[in-house]
Image: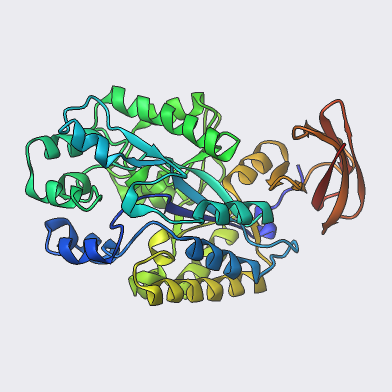
Length: 419
């Protein structure tokens, strides 16, 4: 395999919380809930204005991404770690919280105060352009059992927040969807349900998982692998492990790292321009990316939705401006933008394929020149042709539902044809 990660200068942008109906649905909720304990914490001050992305938020983020080209000539891709569902507040109220499992409203539908007309259509446009790549964050992000218990016992902050269609309260901020404080059977059920709903929404299974709030244990990873998930994000940031700083350093010295078929991505580089802290700003993220390349590993940049979807429009615009600044620096370095799925494929076989909407696919090849690569053709595809790329020639054909390409080292955009 002819793949030099230091020379490739790969960047993976992992962005959490897309699709999450939290912290607040609107300005009124933020105003009336601002005195609750959860909103007065450091996290509350940072996330109190966080809200579900609008169609405009998604479109403007896509515009920022589309301004740049990596060293391979292709635009950056945004790996949107996605939450698949939100609580069904009406159903919960009707049962007075006496429920074995939380009723849900699945994306692209949302609770009434969280409606964002056209948002999922904009996501579809960016997916078609190759700028947006959903991966799995969780089913609903919440410590379901703890939240339902707080509601049943009448906890004031939980009930007040519930009236404004938000789950954010002290009980919720102390846990997360897959942490060990939640019953094991419920965690297992929720991950299976998340994979099922992701597949129905995105028309493919998830490849990568970032457990919410970095709270999980090894049993979740084992189950995830059994469900077809091959990449675990945030292992170096996993909460509850001992010697966290030393462990993060150790993880940063070795790439790739596997357990079974599971690939652990390198330590995340925090890029949180909305935090107002230079340690997680543009210059620091750029320095850390270059450091990752010197260690012969991809630069994994972690940036949360709160920077780009916020009740304060100026906050969102400032986040996009900072993102442009970072992308400009990375593009000047001839960075190449990948997804976790592409990283896994490149590590395990020396080539990767990422769908670009329904129109085509991006093939990256770092193997023996002209050695054939084969993969399943999308449904209905009968032919293929190269459209652009940085590769040095090759051929591609479709026969009996299989794509076969013989190319030299490089990147190739394949366009499908259908009968």
